[in-house]
Image (cartoon, rainbow, N blue to C red; front, side, top):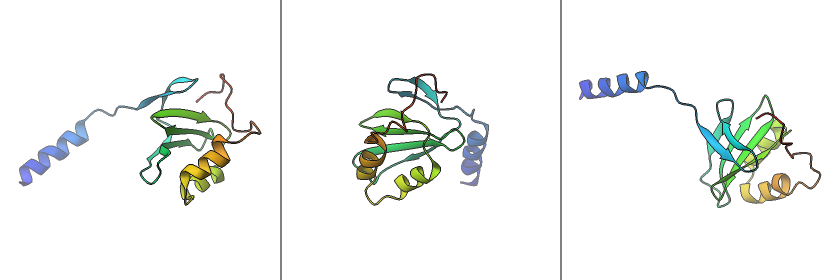
Length: 110
C-alpha cells in the first residue's frame, strides 16, 4: 500500500505541467497561465470564472462558452464571487453593463 502511494506520488511529481487554453467568443484561443480560475457549482448560469488580477481581465463561462471582459476591477470580481446569486449579479453588473467600460477591444492582449 505504501509502495503504491509512493509510486502515485512520483508520477504526479514527474508529470509534465501543461497549461490550459480555452476558446473565447470573438477572441479565439486564450492561455490561462496568468488567470486564477474557479469552477462554479452553485450557479445555474455561471460555470467557470477566470480572472487575471494584473491585467484586470475576466473570462466567464456560461452555457459552455467563454466570454471576455476587460478593465474589470478586483472588487467587481470579488463581488461576483461573493454574490448570493452569481447569475443575477453577472447578468446585471457585468454582462448587462451598458456603459461599455468592461468591453474588450480586439487588440487588447489577454
